[in-house]
Image (cartoon, rainbow, N blue to C red):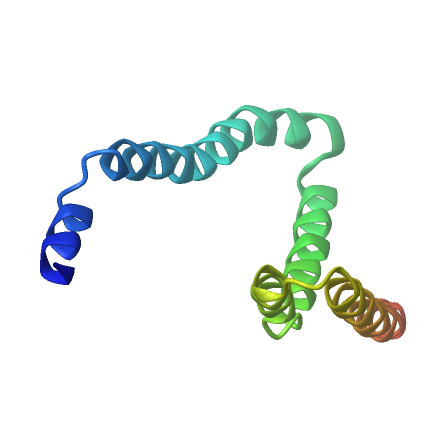
Length: 117
């Protein structure tokens, strides 16, 4: 009976539209910023100039690198909260992660402040 259930779940067609839908959402998440960038970059260059735009890109790059210092905390917290059934445990996990993330953000901000000059 378990093998019959396994073949029924493996051959279910309702998952196919969800996969196609999710794939479309992921692809649009890559396409939309690209299209917006193709439209806005020439406007930025015309309005603020090449040098200022270069400085802006460097600042965004530094922010992106500091975003990588997350060390997987966001994903780990999301997984942990999804598995917890007790509301008090979820709240404790959330606030612990929030305080830890805010602390790392403060340290990153101080480092960026002193290295940015």
